[in-house]
Amino acid sequence: MLRTALLLAGLGIFLGSGAMEAQPAAPAGAGQGPTPAQQAQIDAKLQDALRERDAIIRNLLERVSELEWRVNGGFTTAAKADEKPPLPGAVNSRVINSVVSTSTYDTTEREATQALDQALIVRGGLLLPSGTMEIDNTVSYFSASSDHLTVNGFALLPILVVGDIESQRVRSDYLLPTLTTRLGLPHKMQMDFTVPYGYESIRAVDATGKETDSTSFGLGDISAGLQRQLVSEHGRLPDMLAAVRFKSTTGKDSFNLSSSEIALGTGFNSIQGFLTAAKSNDPVVFFGSLAYTANLPANHTTADPNNPGQTIVGHFNPGDAVGFQLGTILALNPETSMTFGWDQRFTRSTSLNGVSIPATYLVEGTLRLGTTYVYAPGKTVDLTFGVGLTPDTPNLQFSVGFPFRTTLWGPKPRKLPTK
Image (cartoon, rainbow, N blue to C red; front, top):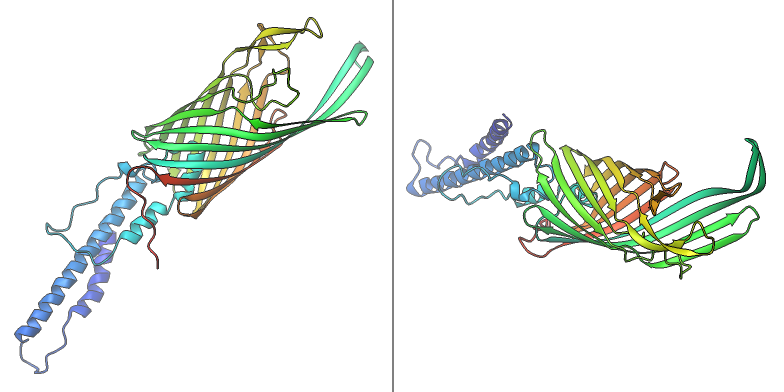
């Protein structure tokens, strides 16, 4: 019905205006038929009008086909260009030389969800087209605080403690620039490579007012991942994407007893698996993901808990983590989108030589707000603000990223025509 209504509306406009333009002026001699020269001019105008009509019909068919494709699951245009159905055939068998250009319309439609698509790509809900490489330089800031209370003594009553009570307030600041490279591959796949390199500062103040500072600057744990789209959105089914990621131990870890610097790495390799779903409801996309992280055990030199001042080589088994993410992305206009999300993660306790270490079970929850703005073709700025709502989560999180794209192979994206 949408196709019929648009065609009738377009033809009505064309016939209403083109009919008057196609009528020739009355010949000088009233009551006489047109001369052969005048008849040739009339025939030429009619042929031009027919070609213009055919071009308008084809243009309407293309627009209706584009709308139907988007309604039936083609909302995210960047990753599904290869799934777009062929346009309807020509109105007649001969080649039509269109006098109504459709290049502006088609390019505008492809650009219509650019900011929204970029937000999905950064959050793992969409893949880059095959042959497209994206380099994302993101700088993140984290601020965390905690208060520690240590009691050296014993309790005579539940409210009476004999001994020394020491309190300590710890403030941590992290500034982590991260370089991420993403590459779209054939068969609906994508690979990425992440290199973190940052600065960390920890300040501790005890009850006497004594302050100690420690800082570190260097390379973090490098990671690499592979992502594949399992299901393309159609009908009620959402986009389904699966990813696997490996994290190395290239950063300094806290088990390096010969160094007084702060650890920028965990000291453990890990393998992460993700399953992400995204469902569009123009102009909103809902997304969610499940994640499981297997932290691999390792041997490290650590202090002997039974012999103070001595060290042993202990077998650490870090706890695995399970988490999920829920959120929505709202397209405000072709260049701007807003993101609202919630991240939750549960990490099991770490064990040393088979004995669980106290206070290593973590519950992290973060409320995130973000915006993505396309300020030039292929260039984007992505802002994210997070608030930690559990004691194990940094209080404040802020990141700004500058992704830009280039095409390594395949067709080059067309630029908008200049006015």
